[in-house]
Amino acid sequence: MTHNTIVHVMNLHKCYSTEQPVLHHISFDLKKGECLGIVGESGSGKSTLARCLLSLIEWQQGQIYFEGLGLKNLAPKQLRKVRARMGAVFQNASTALNPSVRIIDSLMEPLDEHKGYTPSFLAQDSWLGRIGIAEKLLALVGLPEKYLFKYPHELSGGEKQRVTIARAISTEPAFIVLDEPTASLDVTTQAIILNLLKDLKESLSLSYLFISHDLAAVHFMSDRIIVMKNGHIVDQFGVEQIFSDERHSYTKQLLQVFAG
Image (cartoon, rainbow, N blue to C red; front, side, top):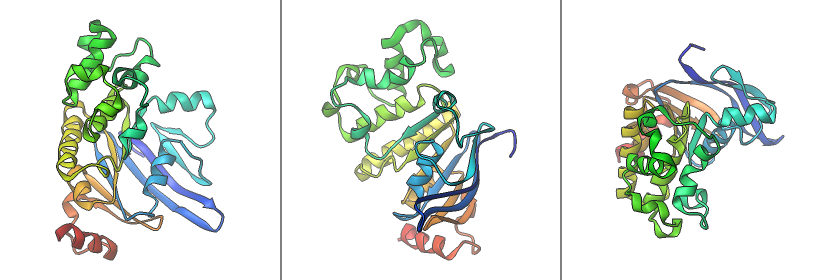
């Protein structure tokens, strides 16, 4: 584990029942400033992995180190501090936003819980106050300030996902889990959101774990790619090596769909 490793996963094993492991002793690192793509078909264990990394569920064996700290069996107080350093964007933005709460209150919830904290990329704007900071966050994801006082049902799917992205970056987390963030969107909106995520990564020096069943999206977003099948890591490589003859047979199957 090097000094620029944010997440170090070692021998992670997760079962929902003793007879059916979902993650089979997997290991990998996520480094600062990179996007690590996780690709695989439905049922490969991708979303279970995401929930383990965010410490939303427990696992039976192995360890996850976040910024050098082992997450297994952390005390609740420690876990809350750790989660404040993580961000997440999930598939369905509609379920991530409380329908009875205005966008400004959903957007600012993480910062409201960390009174006095302003991310470094908005430090020069801290004098603006709560509404001003919220406006700046929306601007970063391409939404006008008038959206702050709308309710989720007044926004399109893509607009709601932009809000969840703005919320995820608001506390300047060490890394962000993107779990199928475009899967529920139409093709045009998918492309817009992927470009937005990539631009934010570059401009804010973000670190992503990007999870998808879509190899084309993973290839577009990622610096490195891990291929999962039935809870196993069957392949991992730098994105420039995706068409190498050394790729696993399952990766080559996914590439046929990608190329088609």
